[in-house]
Amino acid sequence: MSIDTPLYDLPAGYTHVYSGKVRDLYSTPDDRLLFVASDRISAYDWVLPTTIPDKGRILTQLSLWWFKQLEGVVPNHLRSTSVPAAVKGRAMICDRLEMLPIECVVRGYLTGSGLTTYLESRSICGLGLPPGLKDGSLLPKTIFTPATKAELGEHDVNVTFDEVMTIIGQEEAQELKRLSLDIYERASEKVRRRGLILADTKFEFGIGLSGKNVGKVVLADEVLTPDSSRYWPLATWAPGGPQPSYDKQYVRDWLTSPASGWDRHGNTPPPPLPDEVVEQTRAKYVEAYERVTGETFR
Image (cartoon, rainbow, N blue to C red; front, side, top):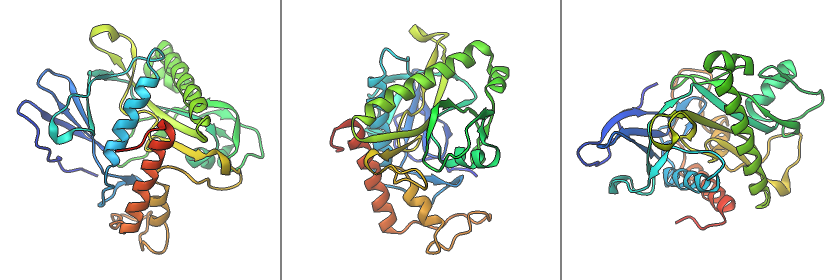
């Protein structure tokens, strides 16, 4: 699945490097990276033909907020928010890193692909779990369940921690696990005070190539947004079924409903989203931002 090169009115010296499901990367005139969060939305490994207004701005502003909360806990790749006018509010200038090929997934609750794997083997990424857990159950302890990064349009592949050590080495694997669990626990405690559950999340890290972070493990990409994390309302949490969530679940539900007429297991691209689904999804992203930060989204 390919994404057309995005058209942003950027000054001379900005060169398009890569486009993922949501983000567009550009090389800057001073050889850093411009991360632009688009309004694209993906589901079931497809980039949908309909965008969600303000989604990119919400993801960027929430990542910036979390980077600030995590100062002193882990270095990050953010260098500046002084970006070209065409991408103001949805972009950040970041240091280049040697990216590590691991998706660092942390789970505090059982849901999503973790639930599917648990039902098949009563384990996730080689970690055994007790019987009797349900969709939405609190896990006996928070677990690190890594995956290898897949190409655009493909599924990430769950791996064991031993496999991670084989891929990147024992020292860096241990550091990824430590940092991922630490960030999750800190974030989970913070949002719980705001009436939210952080069910699971994923992080990406790289190795610093210059400056004060050279040789260090550095937090990259987005962090603790509705695209990378599941936030649930604490007041209504009830294990035994899907939980209300502040993310694109509204989109997933519509795509798998008879109303969409789409077969997610076929090769046909998904249809455009109805206006109501777009509006409700935008509202969920705005609410996530405001619930997490305590600030009004503007």
